[in-house]
Length: 67
Image (cartoon, rainbow, N blue to C red):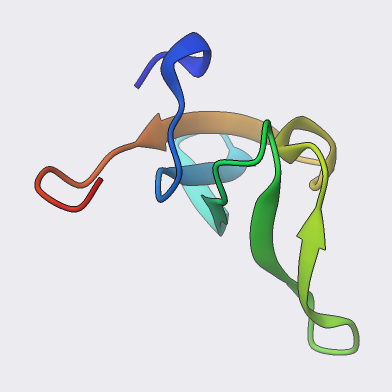
């Protein structure tokens, strides 16, 4: 999915190289994302998926038939 065409329910994968080590779900409220920040912080909502991880966004994926 192109970043300009994101929708609620799209999955954002973060990582380094070809290895995804963090995934979040877009809420549909702008760039807002729900993700498990850490074992200490638990599940959180952040206003912009581009700022939730020190790793790069590897890709955004849409599961057909769900959104």
